[in-house]
Length: 242
Image (tube, helix red, strand yellow):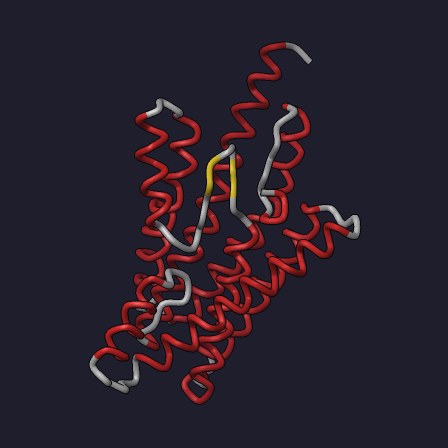
């Protein structure tokens, strides 16, 4: 491989990492908008749920927003623990981390499709807490799927850490790393905007859109992994690896 080819592969490797983060963050933004507008709860960015629960507990308010927030937080956390443990067990048994991540993204897409179908037929409010739980579980899964890209700690379901990493990497003149970090808040904002726009037609469309992004992310992740082998990089995309 010539030096120019190697450099091209490195650029492509960085680009696919950024696209992967952007796709998943955009999906999270769209999902959060649907959950907030329909059920007044967050399913990706769990910080908001903690605030609602804390306020409700402190003033003794048993409003309808506290229980949905608790359901979302518990479901998200349970999925986080379960998927991280299952992934670790599978990898210890010799399964490739790429396959583990692929399966996780497929499960996430299926869960989003189920929730979208319930919303599409206007039966979601009859099983409101079930839908909230399914959406939160999908985001708990996603939180485990991607934790590091190009050596940067990444969370596509929360933006605070990514904003800090963006500033830190920019100050250190690590342009590619900063581009990865800033992809989360940008993607989340884009997803939230698109999700809000899709409410004009149907909330279900935003979830189908998010599921489609997850499927596209599968192919981007495969390309990213292939490029990692070409440039000899530690791709570090799955939680069990880093």
